[in-house]
Image 1 (tube, rainbow, N blue to C red):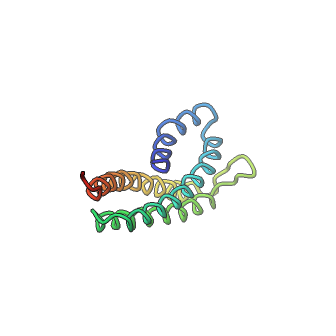
Image 2 (image 1 turned 90 degrees about the vertical axis):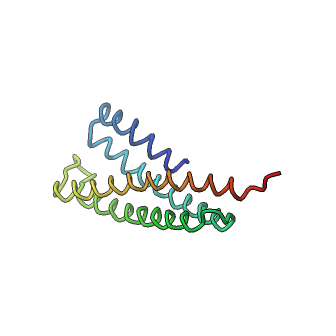
Image 3 (image 1 turned 120 degrees about the vertical axis):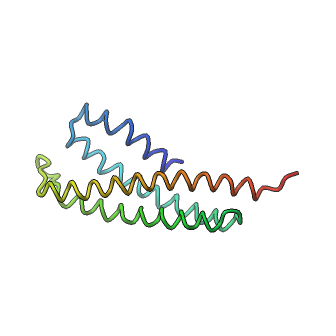
Length: 138
């Protein structure tokens, strides 16, 4: 919940407000740091999800498929983050060296994040179903 909920809150509320208050480049500087933190939270989350999946038997195959997708999108986000960073000069005025390339990689990152968020919701739903199914009824 922290990983996907944090992403949702940041994308829906913080980015638009920060852009309005700070301007696009300064908000980008904040986002640069926050996305790295969210991605590291994602790594920890995926380790916990994997551990949980070994503990529960219900919905195992579907949950592993989603888990692999989440790992793949997270790995791709780390790569995209590095690609986006290549085009921004953070030491000066935030000049973007190759805007079309920057824009492409930024859009890829956003598409991965959106797909990951949807998969995260599916993972959460299947996990809740698995927990309920594996819980002995009295």
